[in-house]
Image (cartoon, rainbow, N blue to C red):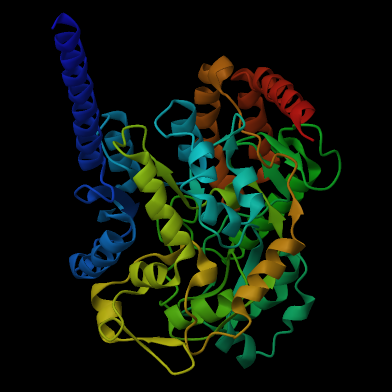
Length: 484
């Protein structure tokens, strides 16, 4: 009898353990979302002006996601001007969410402080398809301390700065753009526009381009030359090239080719306002077609530099998974689908077929008024370009040209290197303030560089630039020694 009771008790305990485990598994699945549970809601924050039809579009998105990965997505856009502050407050507060748009320095700093998850393991499992789809240079370039903390947008991986011109004025005065090889080559054209086009500003405010790989950004005095000694970190504001470039800009400023308030102006020079002749910006294949479509008049560009893959160009658009995510696996499943499934990618980007755009028999698309008015989201911030439908006036080889562009680029010396500023935090704070004081006026030509560059460099010395240069060089050398 005792033996039978013992066996019966053991059986009851075993059944209880099994039921408990099943219950625990079911509860976990229900909490996180899965084939046997309720769909998990993915909270996604991204940049851009909130759109009227977002809920309508994501009702369709979520029908599809429930079927494919048993999840839904709540996408919240934060407007451009509010993004930097609001997104960082949200991250710092520890608010639970799943995915957030990030880029550049913010991506690196938030990764370093643990706000984002390292996703290397997730990329090898839930994200294995997107890992195959993304340009390896993008993944390599966004590594922080050897780990990947986000999914970069698969687009142009390189940067190429260009001079962009109002084509109507180029044609009107028969300007030969093939002669434009440098900043100095603009002068004859600027002179004509100044004399003959009173309603046109010859140069939309821009800061002169210099051929350096910047450790932080072009305002800060830490860089490595693209040409020359690619192993040495320097203060580029001490170079002869910088002096010559700023002297040219000052000459143009004095001639009235830029607005008087160029150093302080917040004017973004919207492309659809035809009040400029030449501007500078970062390009991509067939960018002139995109810009002309937005401007409603034709523009034409010539290169100011050769394509180069730098940290900023590979980290310009990233979706990171928050360390506060309750289900990072499900978040990665969504990102995997968004970057590999053409139906989902086009739906999130362009809206609903027949409502926001129409598709032709050849597969190309054309925007309808509702897309412009009610669902116009920034394409670059969302995901893989190479599975987007082409517009009816896009070249058929558009995505092939993107791949050629990426393949043609040289690699910057610091691609994949991210400086840890903890040892020189106070010096960098002082240098940042000094750079903000001097750089805008110098780079727009608003002041005489022969007077102000020496003052700038003297203040940088006093603020401890040599200590920072030494620390950057030390970390850069250490990083290089780990590269294959």
